[in-house]
Each structure stands twice: as structure tokens, then as C-alpha cells.
Image: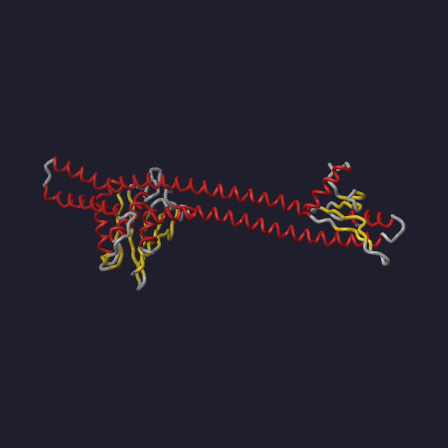
Length: 390
């Protein structure tokens, strides 16, 4: 049990680490894409700068204007061409709210913080190269969309972590509540049969019945109470394995239940088809508990005044298969797995712990399997247990 709670802390820590790694990964990938797009934009602007510099040789400004109007304006990101003192001369793709010269100058500063301006250089054969202006450019609309999408993704991750933490805590607390309530009901369910039987035998004694006839049944019910105590004392502890006669244990369980079936509210015939002398290495107390829970579940599923439950068995060198069949109301196929979940029950008065305990005993303690092999509505159900031979 302590290990399980330790795992709960690990799960929460895992959810947090997943959120951190996803955030780091998204930031890293976004920065990579932004750098790649900025490098592409810079390469394009450099080409434009060379075209403009070559056009300066033309005595008319019409060449530069033609280049700016018909080439540079085709780009998808803001560009401002300035003189050598960084006074705006031509521009394109600026936001609609940027209208005045002061606003354009402020935008130049903000663009230069992101992308270094590219100088416009005139190369003369008779003199040193001369810088006659600059091309300032900002991020493209695609880069801006990537940035916005990054924040949306991080916000989604934060919601995922938040929902993961609180959702997991809610589910765990809800499951714990079901388990505690179900455990209380299971305790009452386990104690109910021997206690009610003892009360019945007490009435027989008061009426003057022969004590010699009643004494074996009294001993059986007292032993039953001790068995219930042993069952619950083994919960949460490492079970001790032993070699025992499985067929004998099943016969004892069936004999006890058969005599007390009227107290369950019906007349059900229990048919034992298990061969004699079947020995396995397991925890006898827990295996008996699991089989009894399945038989009780079959009894509860029989709505008619009478019915039958058949216990069959197959075995080979590796495992033993026990099939418990009833002619009860059946289980919808969508609930074949749900019936083993803690808190799930198709019965109005059930708390959904008996079958989940059965699954824990077979699957986790003994390394076997328990599942619905077949079930049809209003015809019956077959549940199969597989117990490995160790």
C-alpha cells in the first residue's frame, strides 16, 4: 500500500515533468523555425539591397522607385528604406496605425532590435565604397503567427497539467471513497451470512432442538467468522503461498453456501464439476474468497425463484482454468471489463468491490487472469479464472 502511494507521487511528478519538457520542446522548436525564417528573410533583403545599390548608377531615381514598387513591395514582411541618417524614404507592409514620421522612426528602432539593418552600399571604381542608406525589416506575418501559436500551445499545456493534477486527485479521492464504502459493505456482506445463521441456530436452541444436530453447523459458522477475519487481515500484506487441495476447498465453500442460500433470497442449485485431488500452490484463503465472490455474484444475478450455478475446471501442465456459469440476467458486453473496476456495480444495492477484490487476488497476487468469457442478456454468464501452477 505504501508503494502504491509512492507511485501516486511519481505519477504527479511525471505529469509535471511532461509539461516542462513539452514547454521546453515547443520553445526550442519555435525558436528554430523563427531563426530559419529570419535567415531566409535576411537573404532576400540582401538581394534587394544589392539590386538597389546597382540601380544607383542610373542618374534617374525611376529605377530605384521601380525596384521598390514592383519588387520589394511583393514581400510579406515590413521593410523601410532609409538614407544614411536613417530617415525613412520608402516603406511597405507597415501596420495601419503607423502613419507619422515619428511612428516610422520608432518602428525602425523596434525592427533593428530584432533584425540588424542591411546597408545600401555604392561601389565606385574610383573611390571607396559608400553607404548611402539602409534597409530595415521586421518579422514576417508567418513568424508572428508562430509566436502566437506558441503561447496558445503553452497555455494548453498548462491546462493539461492543471487538469492532470486536479483530475487525477479527484479520481483518486473518489475511488478511495468508493473503496472504503465498498469495503465496509463487503465486510458486512461477509459477516452477514454466518451472523444470521448463528442467530437462526440460537432460535433453534431456544425452541429445544437437539444440540447435537445444531453443534456442527454452529462450529461451521464460527469457523466462517474466523475465515472472514483471516481474509481481511491478509489485505495489504504479502500473502503466504501453500500447497492445498483446490477441489476440497471449493467443495467446502459450496457446501457452506448451499445450506444458506435461502438467506440470500432464492433457491439456487450449486453444481460442482471439479475433479478430486487437484493440488495447486497458492494462498488458499484468498483463492476461496475469490471463488466465493464469483459464486455470490452469480447468485445475485438470478432474478427467478430458482436457478443454477455450475463450477467446471480444466487443467494442463501450466495452469488451471475454473469456469463459473450461471443462468442469471447476464452482463451487457460494454460492461464486461467495467464490472471489475472498484465502485462499479450493476446491482442497485452493490458497491462494486467484490469483483474488483477477486481480480486483485487472481491477477496481482497469483499472476493469473479473471474475465467474462461469455454473457448473454437474460440467459446467463460464464466467468473464467486462470490460475498458474507454480
